[in-house]
Each structure stands twice: as structure tokens, then as C-alpha cells.
Amino acid sequence: MSRHRFTQSWPAALLLAAACVCVPLLAKAQTAKPADSSQPEKMTSQTRIMVIRSLQSERVFARILFPQGNKGIKIKNGVVSPTDMVIAQQVSEFGAAAKPGDRCVITDVKVTDKDIILEINGGTKKHQKWYQHIQVVGGGGAVPVPGGPSPQSLDSHGSAVTLEFDKYVPELNGDQVRALLAPVFDFKALTPAEAYQKTLSPKLQAAIRDHKILVGMDKEMVTYAKGRPQQRIRDKDERGQDYEEWIYGKPPEEVEFVRFKGNEVARLEIMSVDGNKIVRSEKEVDLPSKEAELAEQKPATKPQAAPTLRRPGEEPEFPTTTSDHRTTRPQDTRAPVDGSPYPDTTGTNPPGTPPINPNGSPTPHLAPAS
Image (cartoon, rainbow, N blue to C red; front, side, top):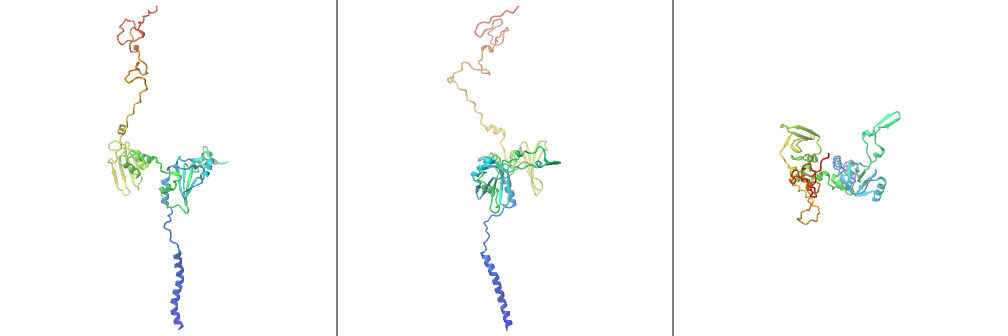
């Protein structure tokens, strides 16, 4: 009888034990906080490279005073530190790297786990070249190579800006980083490339912005659109005409062959990755010629006449006709006759007639000395 009761009670005991184990687990799962989906992701290595390329070598205008030295400026949660008083003290001690309104160059960009560091005008520390570290080891120890840099030349004249984050650098693009740097930098000033694009037609602006080449562009436009070519070739075509070809890219990537006739793109050949060949030789843009630009220019205005006291229409009493603005004398228009020092081209002094002095009296002939 007892054995039968035991066989009936063991399933109930098993269920009771399972309930005792599952109830705490369910309670813990209910009390656990759900994951915050609004938390930004950590910056990936690919995004880090894109941000560095976007900001590297960019020209900006300073909004605040930047001190020299190894401290620089820090920005966290939109707050700039140190204070203006501390910056003024650092400037008085180390000097100013940039003043408000000065144009600066971002010379280096570093992205760490919690910071984004941007160096301007060379940064806080001047880096030496590899050959400046060479030393000659002799009996007296290591001696620097003669002609190396002096200690004064190693002083840096730049500064740095550090964007600080709480836990890690979140996923940001170049424009978002520029927005965070707005308290200290002005990025809205036009770069030389942007200023040049403003002078072009909308079609050319879109092509340069998209890094595309159009047949009819000149060398300057191609340089702004694609940069400097990896290779240049000068040769003659089948007609014997000289041309210059710029090559962008290397296999197995896409390769573009840009052929110039003079200063203008005459032919564009593209070898795609899949092996297709695209050739364009029809003119896609028309650039104004130099003659048309000169014709559109307004003629230069004539200089105003010198002030005078004569009435309108009144002729000058002694007109100046010579190049040195001197009044022409009557004797200046005559040819010499009979050895006379006074020329006569009007025929008023026939041969043998004494020449006339400027006062109107005849000049006597002088007898030759015996």
C-alpha cells in the first residue's frame, strides 16, 4: 500500500521542484530592464577612416583664441574648456596659435576610444623627420649628425582641439563632427575648390562635386574633379597630332584615360571592373573661348581731360603739338639755306637772301676769316 502511494506522489514532487526553480527565474526576467535601443552605436573602423579623410587638411576659421602648448582646447557636451581667463594666461605664457578670425589648417585627426583629437597648424608637438634622428656612434658616444635642427626649430606653434565623450566615440559622420566643433571652428567659409565651383555652370558644378569628367573640360576642372593623375603620357595620335593623357586608377579597379588636345578634354576612355570599355568623344560641355571673354569685357573708360579756364569751344592761344608739349616755333619748320643756322621749308628765303632772325630783321653775312 505504501509503495503505491509513493509511486503516485513522486510526479507531484517533481512538479513542485520545477515550480520552485522557474518562479525566481521568471521574476528575475520580469525585473530585468529592457535594452535601450536609443543608445548610439560605437564608431566602426570604416566610419573612423571616413571621418579622418573628411576633416584632414581642411581649412577653417578660428572662433576663439587658441594657445600654444600641449594642453589645447577641450569640448565635452557642448562646453568649451578651459575658461577664457585661463586661455588668456596660457597665451601670455606660451603665445597664441590662432586668434579669432584667423585661418587655420587641420593638420592631423586622431580617433581614440573616447576622444576625437584635431591638431591645427602643426599641432602641439613638432614631429621630426626620420633622418633627423640619425646619430653617429663613436668613441665619445652618440653624436647627432651635423646640420640637424636646433632646439628652437623644434618648438611647435600649433594647438589642438579634443572632443571628449562619456563612454566611447559614437557613430558620427564628418558633418556631425563639424557641428560639434562649431563653438571653436567656422566651417562655412568657402574653400578654393568651392569658390572655383561657384564660377561654373550648374552642370560643371555637379560633375566636379560627383568627381566625374566630361568631354570639354579643361585641365583645371579635371584636377578639381579627380585630383592629380597617377600617371601622365605625352604622345601623338594616328593623325600625328600631339596629345596628353592622364590616367586615373589601376587594375583591377576602374581605370580612366583622359586625353587632352591642348587644354581641353577631347576623349574619355573608361575601363570598368567587369571588362567593359566605354569611350566618349562627343563634346559634353562648351567652355567660353578667350576671344568671347575679351569681347564681353567693357572697353576701358578714357581719362578725363585736365581742368582748364577756357570757355567751351575756345582754342588755346599756343597749341602744343610736339611730343614734349612745347610750343612749335616757326624756325623749327624750315630747312637750312646757304649755311644759315635757320632752316626754311616754306620757300620764303630764296637762295642768296639773308636768313631772317626770329625778331624779323635780316641776319648779315659774316666774311670768312683771312
